[in-house]
Length: 396
Image 1 (cartoon, rainbow, N blue to C red):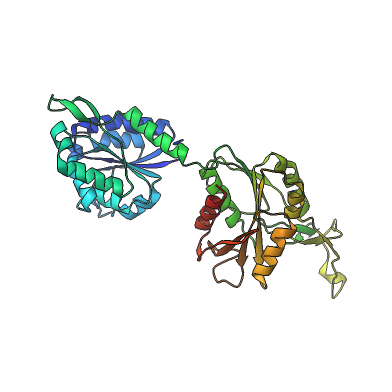
Image 2: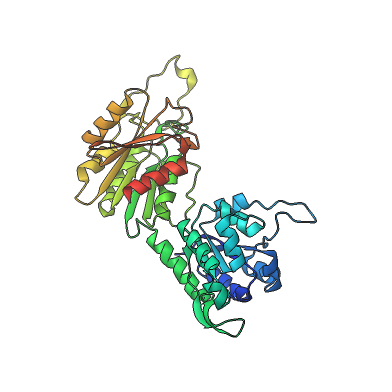
């Protein structure tokens, strides 16, 4: 569950900090990428050298490197992470987190984190039981943080009671369980088409379009992150999936794409037809390059390509979900809803070239998503990754 995950490990100044070497090692063995952020007092209990050697990354503790002035961006760290774990979390740091006292790199990173945050308290039993600690932990819970409850046992004071940081193995198990629950498409097989198709005229020329495949590959990555087993049937593009688990089948023409989709679709639970498939192809493909000198004008006879979405719509069995895309320049909603019905789709995603920043060769998109009952959702202009996440959330 942790393979490829970006984990910020926040370490504070408690004796349990010695356990973070084990925790770091366990996270890395599970395939996570770990960035350690320490409070200054944490360095009194475990050295940055130890943790840097384990993670392969410099430990972050201060806002900037004193001898070079290099700035450490807590905002960038917060955006990078899939999860932040603060272990051990002392009473002092818990109080700062609860009340927004951003006087060190760890707390500022916490305040910038977009990912879920897990807090593993560690302190003496009387501190743990104090009303202020109880209140601060309740505040953190109310903010949406996950509290990994401390265990009872012998403490640094040699007293016995509740306040021991949970063991590293159990902290890792909490994270794995969380990410397992956050995979709504786990066990689902998903087919996605992406990019353009090229329809050959002769050995050097083709009919195509401006699709880059960015939208289709963004959907593939979002689906893989949601736990799906993803296969992309892709026309010629330069982009690649960010998620290693995504399988890519490369094709060139609409006929090749159709053949692959027909072969794969019966075993799929979901399919998203995002490719910009050429509607027509040359009726004749010349074996040699057509010379410009042969005539002042040239006529290319075209034949209709197969409609891949409609073909799969005709094959669709109960339990399968089929989503189409419609890129329109006029009568957008009317055309999209007509395609939804005529191709036996469960959902259609409409985007318009009339919207600046949407469509081909951009990093952003604005879509309206329709189902048989009408409009499901219309998004503002978002990154294609955000649009993909929105679509996957509707399919989950």
